[in-house]
Image (cartoon, rainbow, N blue to C red):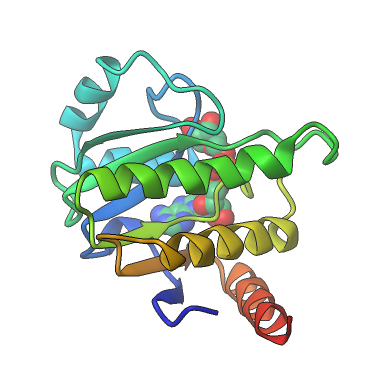
Length: 173
Ligand code: AR6
């Protein structure tokens, strides 16, 4: 695994990185989980800017400022809702990471943190999601221009363990 990828356990809203990624819904008008935490930490101006974006398709990403967050930017992406795994979920989840990292490059972001997209309310199994996330992060770093650090933020110790196992598996192959 590329050494520029770091797995941590914690709250993404506290991180001093250039950009944090939000696991949003297609309205981009807020919600629960990490989305709710990011909006409450960023303050009401984040919602105001989100209103001007007119939503976001699954797998796509849009960027805003970070307002009261330590991060300069929030990259909002919409993960797939898990419907059993045969409905393009893997590819759509991979697109969230690809498009988020592409937007980060366009804004000269050097450090970026991702939550475990789709694995909360949207029900994507975290083992499977962690492999997709790490692969996309690793692949991006092979041709990255400005991104030098990618942090995978696990909210629970349980998810942190799963991500660490995925890293070990990755290193074996
Ligand atoms: N920092 C890091 N990770 C967090 C935080 C936090 N502060 N809070 C939660 N997580 P979810 P989804 C983890 O449900 O599955 C929202 O309502 C959480 O433990 O936030 O993509 C949106 O508006 C889990 O591991 O996102 C959408 O409607 C991960 O973040 C819907 O949920 C993602 O869980 C999106 O569902």
